Amino acid sequence: MDCEASQYVFYEGKGRNIELKEVQQQQVHEPEVEETPQVVEENSTDLETQPLRRSTRERHEPERYGFLVTTHGDVILVDQDEPKTYQEAMASPDSEKWLEAMRFEMDSMSENQVWTLVEPPEGVKPIGCKWVFKKKTDMDGNVQTYKGQLVAKGFRQIHGVDYDETFSPVAMFKSIRILLAVAAFHDYEIWQMDVKTAFLNGKIEEDVYMTQPEGFVTPENAGKVCKLQRSICGLKQASRSWNLRFNDAIQEFGFIRNEDEPCVYKKFSGSIVSFLILYVDDIVIIGNDVPTLQSIKTWLSSCFSMKDLGEAAYILGVKIYRDRSRRILGLSQSTYIDKVLKRFSMEESKRGFLPMRHGISLSKGMCPSTPQERERMSQIPYASTIGSIMYAMICTRPDLSYALSMTSRYQANPGEGHWTSVKNILK
Image 1 (cartoon, rainbow, N blue to C red):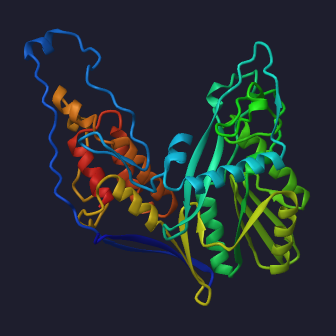
Image 2 (image 1 turned 30 degrees about the vertical axis):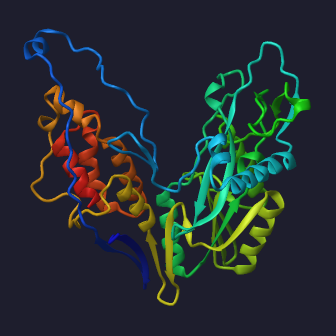
């Protein structure tokens, strides 16, 4: 496949100024896609006189990220052919690796004493759980580890009964960009850590009961349920419980929480400066003194099960390039952009020059006006495409802001002209 789509955002320190430079490299070729809209045979007079009723067309399961549905109805796993259920994992060629990943997850549950097996309480219906499988890749898209995560079906929880507060903050990416720019200007160290099974560190106060994980039910405990002592992924209060636990631990070490950005922490001691950024279970540590940063790592490792990732190279799907001799730091989402292009069959499209050309005007008049047009546009993943582009815009592509703000206004009822403008952004 002759496809290259990459971009970088460079922070360069010169004197007292920080300059933002953007370099764009895109070489893609557009395929000729022949689209055949469905033909709906209806009496025109009936359409004018009869009220609009629910569509009788066949409904399909919504398209998920990483899946494509062909015109023949075949489902293709675009990303990494990850199983969706326990049965699929056990039937896949990588069943041994998936089983090992699940065993590792169960060992973590046991070590952290996440639950105790009890008899089902009378009148209480336990929530379910499921396995979620993911192949974790490196910055180049190569598979590094197989991960099997046990997720509770928190949508069955009842407010006021088994959960209350759910809000939990995460660091905004603009805050990460600002601190990376500061680090590039002052030549600070940028280190990264990952919290293993982060949510298991949070304690829950409510009584929550869960069914036992599929594939790990022993005959002697077949009729019992899990009474949760700690939060696990999927519970409505899980993220909040973990955030409160981490906040207490890091403030105990002397860090001060930023009032406007609750997931950014700072610590000053004379000329020694340290910053810490938390995004769920990803931690970025920035500072100008190596022994101090090492002591932060040691403290975190004593409080939680941590993985030291060394110098930051890949943060939230964004690749970091750094030239410390020139004090330049670059950000790239090339891997993510390639996935988005492939997902929407645009990996072979011709290269574009501007997100939105001069003279392009979008309006409600371009929305579908006939049942045939509405039927055809209902098959177009317009809103999904807008959402995929938006993440790139927030992280590394602010030049897409205007084009995205114009096209996103018509997500409720997009027309052909609107969709063409979105495809131009992808180009």
